[in-house]
Length: 166
Image (cartoon, rainbow, N blue to C red; front, side, top):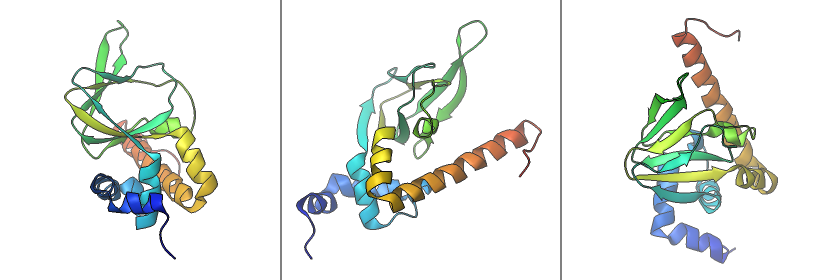
């Protein structure tokens, strides 16, 4: 059975191949099959942010997961004096804003590009579409996301000197 035209384009396009290879290198998507990665690439947006450009502001409603392909993104939070305080610098291959995939609540930090940065975005609406039309892919993504969030919580709890009950 021949591949549909849109899948042929995805699998023969060098840019899509590059995106697939990058996404496959991430723990979040490492277990997805070749075809599944093609569907994921179809549902992701990519965007370049320039130095100093704000990706989102603390208090904005979250609607997307961000995956940094290149560049650096700084996360800051308003301190008691209202001035931004650095929380973390996102490096290539890391993702952030993942809670937006789970709930649409205000962002807890501001994200700003420290240099020219290439970012992939997975919007909540696109993930919901994947869950509806390709449930196996969606379940794999959500399972990995839950595992990665759990690991982050354990590290944060350990760093704070307390461990959550298992």
